[in-house]
Image 1 (tube, rainbow, N blue to C red):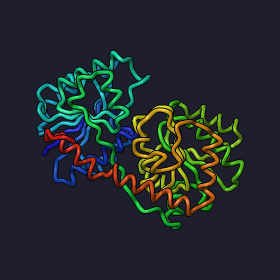
Image 2: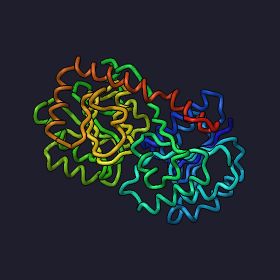
Image 3: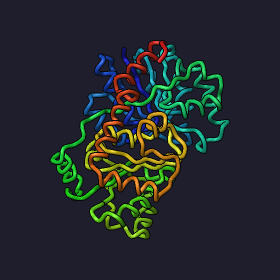
Length: 367
């Protein structure tokens, strides 16, 4: 098949990482793929080029991108594809599809709903989606159930398909030193890290408070944050107030997140709201143990207290710090956690299975 993928934006968040894995998986099956971003191609551009994926980005002008719709329609008229995937919700883009791939359209939603838009806006989006798409896919039941509660009509075409996570052996000591040197991180330190958008709901403030607990008890510990966002300056001030500013490394966005994860001894992830949260899964996939706290989200559908212990439903800083220290101080226990986490990911987050599910939906079958 020739598959055309429209994506809301081309940053390097979880949605984009899943898209890169999917496009690679589709190519491996012999499908031709092409991507169009409704925003300019950002850091995702070079990664698409590495995969030989034809890609372009549009300017995003006007509220909701309405001033770019005519350009989008003109671009879509030139598309010659058998199937279409729209990644991310964009009402105007849905309306602009015309007759393109009318019988093979998949809408892939990667975002939670509560507190993001008013319910009436989501209801409008899903009513239009119900009329214009063959299937709607979600990474977790958590956000699928949110969507179905908002617009019950989509139940007939909605599916939970998980997410794709690559699995790698834990890094050797030499490999860890190599990636640390490339990132400017001291090779012999204990490194605790987190990655993602520096925005309020991601709770990097909780991460920094846990870092203080760890730093007080473990002099070798340093803390690395890969990412950027509007909270950056506030978080840097908080690190100063907590007395750990000299022990935090702000690395900015990393185009190759696997190398970042493999530089870590431990990943700590905290969030108030997340459809899924790829950071803990990617870290485990890269061979790094994880401590996580999620108030609302789908992570518990993949990692929970039964199959992976250090996953919590509250931001109890002292408890999270205590667990983190125990993992840092007991390498055998850390290795056991990674093994358990990777076995779970092999069961429910296989890149191959994820791509197969998408292909089945594009072919009109059940995921």
